[in-house]
Every structure is written in structure tokens, then in C-alpha cells.
Amino acid sequence: MRHLLSTKSLSRVEAITLLDIAEDMADVANREVKKLPTLRGKTVVNLFFEDSTRTRISFEAAAKRLSADVINFSAKGSSVSKGESLKDTAQTLAAMGADGVVIRHPASGAPQVLAGSGWIDAGIINAGDGTHEHPTQALLDAFTIRRRLHGTASRGRGLDGVTVTIVGDILHSRVARSNLWLLDTLGAHVTFIAPPTLVPADTSAWPATIGYDLDAAIDAGPDVVMMLRIQAERMNAAFFPNSREYSRRWGLDDERFSRLSSHSIVMHPGPMNRGLEISSAAADSDRSTVREQVANGVSVRMAALYLLLSGDREDS
Ligand code: ASP
Ligand code: CP
Image 1 (cartoon, rainbow, N blue to C red):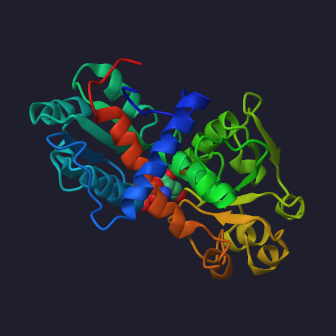
Image 2 (cartoon, helix red, strand yellow; image 1 turned 120 degrees about the vertical axis):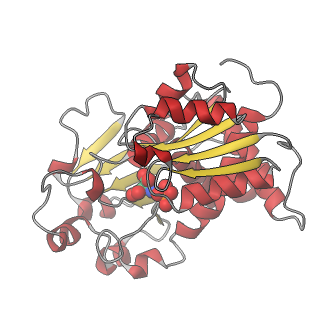
């Protein structure tokens, strides 16, 4: 694998291979010495043009556990604020010998531009681009679901027949898009629940059921309920009357949480806005995978870095 830009372009075999390697990486995390020498001598640059807590930290931890050198670059405090372009920034990183670049950018498509530009000969990983995709988030979500369902017998399996209901700001969510493609590839069935104003006008090409009624979706007893944050930073208009109204109709509050089927798990990519899209009781319960998702994120990102940067990089 040369770059990891989207889940839409991942085959089932590629996705399961990555999840299986992540299982091996998770085994390493349980050892006393958590480090592997695999990427010794390689340099990974975390290039973040947008805020991040989990993704940036877990890519740093992943690269370090594989013994790579890590350079953290955030646009705030860099020469980007002096008007430097993505091209010049990329060429600066190339001059410093970056082997892998993990990029988060507010513009959809920025990682693709970097990968196809010729400005830098590095493996590019998309860590979230605008409203487009966030592939490692979807991979860590799939990894988490697979582990909850199959435990240590997860290796080699997809998510055939698993029902996943994703709730919230579908219009602006790159997490929703990456999950849609990956879950579909792995054999799961996706339902999106959102206010009508937060669903794209044309979803005919999406392998998903679209609905607007969270209560009905909960009563259907899905295996997974994934709550999404309202992407206020990507909104230039009012998409719902106010946050209380949103929470009343589309929030996983205590009452809805208590009605969830006993086997359902609750997911959230973070950051959470407690009391808005999810209640604290739901977020902190045994059925919530929020903290597991973060821990699994390190294993999944180790797998991605390993696949892209170890050995001779091939064009595929
Ligand atoms: N952290 C995720 C993202 O960057 C989800 C969110 O911010 O709501 O897409
Ligand atoms: N889930 C996620 O991407 O979190 P951050 O925005 O904190 O990286």
C-alpha cells in the first residue's frame, strides 16, 4: 500500500489485512516492552492544519512504538500563518527527508493533492480532510466493533450482517463517510439518522438506509449506535432551531439509552459534547466503547504506518 487516503478505495482483503495487523500490534501493547524496531531510521511527520487531540497523539504514539522518528507540525505557530502554501510546506518536509506524512486539513482532498503532487515522495495518510474522509477513524471503529463481537477470535473476519446506526451531523461528517464505505465493504448494514437538514441532498449512491426518527431506530435494536458531534466549525448557517431541540430529537439521552437493546454498544469518535448528542450515563457506561476506540486507534495507526513504510514501498 502506497498511501491511505480513503476507505472507499480499500478492498475487503486490504481492510481485513490491516485490521489483522492491528491485532498483532495490540498484542505488542500488552508486552512489558511495547516497542518494535520495524521503522527504525524512518521519519514520520504529523502535519496538522486543524485541531486534534486523539488522532495526533495516537499517530505520534504509533510511530514511536514502531521506533520511527516523529516530527509534529501544527499550522498554528508555523509559517503557514505567514502565508506559506501547502506546496512549499510539503517541499520543506521533503527536504527534511520525511518518509511518511500524516495530514489533517480543513480542505476536502488536500491529502490526495499531496499524494499526487510530486512535491514529496512520502507515504501519505489522511488524518481527516474537511467533510470528506477520516479513514483511520473508520478502521479503528471497525476494529473496535469486531473485537466487541468476536474478542480474540476476530482475526480474518469482516462484519457481515452487523447493523450500525450512525446518528447526527451526517452532512458535514468525514467519520460518517469513511464508516459508510468501510462498513459496507466489510458486510455491515449502515443506517444514518439525522435531522433532514443535516443529510446531503442526494444520497442515492450511498449503500445506507436514511431515517429521521431516532426512537424508531433505537427500537429496531441495532448492534451498534454511533453518535456524532455537530460539526459547528463547518456550518455557515443554522441547520436546526437550537441545541435543546437537537438534543431532544437526536440526542442519546438517558431515556433512550435505557431503551437500547441489551446487546447494543455505544460509540463516539470524540470529542464528545456531553448533554448535547450524548448523555454522560451513555458515554460512561460499560456499553460505551469511547475509551477502547482511543486505545485501539494506536494499534490501527501502527498497522497503517507499518503497511505504508516498512520494507520497499510499492505502487498500488
Ligand atoms: N474527531 C473527529 C474528526 O476530526 C470527529 C469530530 O471532530 O467530531 O472528524
Ligand atoms: N476522533 C478524532 O479524530 O478526534 P480528534 O479530532 O481529537 O483527533
